Image 1 (cartoon, chains in turn cyan, purple):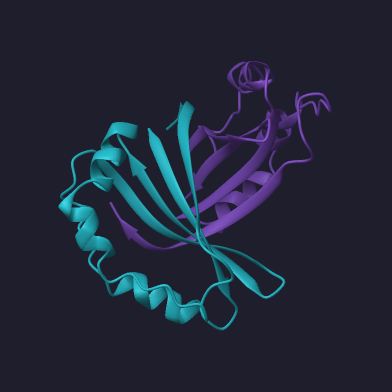
Image 2 (cartoon, helix red, strand yellow):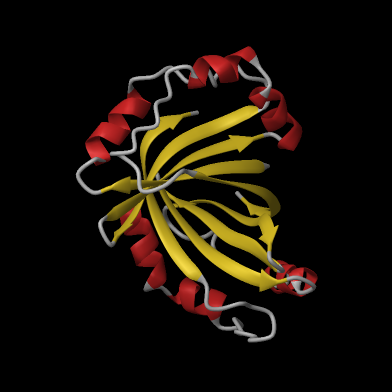
Length: 103
Length: 103
């Protein structure tokens, strides 16, 4: 299993606006080969910043890489706007490989 | 869905030792009410430090909290050793609530 998490530092007071962006778009993910699951995750708040993370599970790294080169990826990000007012800095993408699993 | 991730900063060269600790212990998680899944995740390396994360999904926050107060939790952590040689600082625990899901 392969996990990609994009960490967003959202200013307090902007949480609803941030969540609305995600909930109002069509990610086109369900039709993508190798897609397993997506969650928008609400994390801890500290110093006026709320951590969110997009959390996407893939069959393997190759499935993720293929998606980033696909029309579905372009369509999903076509409406993405970077509002400087909403964020404290750019998002940070982290990739993880599962090395042990218990399910 | 509720996600707990404990982020470990492991010094390069200590990856095998770190993974062995996890793979050689019995977490007792499968018998815990509300437990969904566990993965040990290997993340990116930067500046001589490899990021790992324990990644545990729970039915809800209450299931996680109940586990931290249980005998299963004590048993799972009884053998935990903090080797200063293995880590660059203490682990950082982050909790996330799913606010949008696509599965």
